[in-house]
Image (cartoon, rainbow, N blue to C red):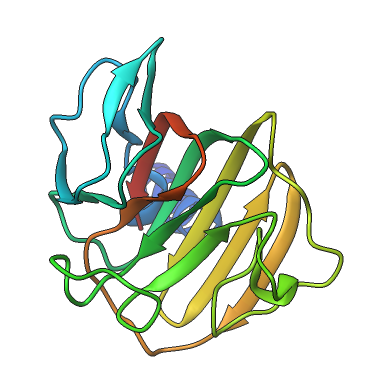
Amino acid sequence: MNSRSAVLFGAVAAGVALLAVSPSSSAQDQEWVTLLDGTNLDNWNPVGDANWRIVDGAAQADMGGGHLVSKESYGDFELRAEFWVDQPANSGIFIRCADPAMPGAMSCYEVNIFDTRPDPIYGTGAIVNFAAIENMPKAGGQWNTYEIMAEGDHLVVTLNGRRTVDIRDATHASGPFTLQYGAGVVKFRKVEIRPL
């Protein structure tokens, strides 16, 4: 093998090795998209009569009932959301909603925020009807961060650094996601998503 062929072969081999150890470009190169930054509700469609509005850099509701529904639909994604609720609040993030006009625990995965839920196994940190939680964390009275990953049938929920859900379920494949207002005072100040 002459020196030019050896250099070319070495370069090709190095490139193949680099590809073998590099993460998938499709998943890793996707950028986080901010859907809520506390300045407006432009990326959302309101459903119901909750009084969503921007207050002190956060989307807030404290009357009525309903959802802010993302204008886009998502299948596989990572989601980060910062939220604050008071103790009696009933809220959640509903993902992969089959019917965005009627979001609910039967047509979406409901990642719950409900410290005072009468049956705490599906309270804060759980996915209602799909993934129960032991030793339910409390979210009331402080800023919290949910990290939600949905990839195929794999669903992972992390609340303030604690993994609360890690399940496989293929009931809902894709759809918009929502921010729910059910009771109390609910605020979301930053919501970002990254398609996988």
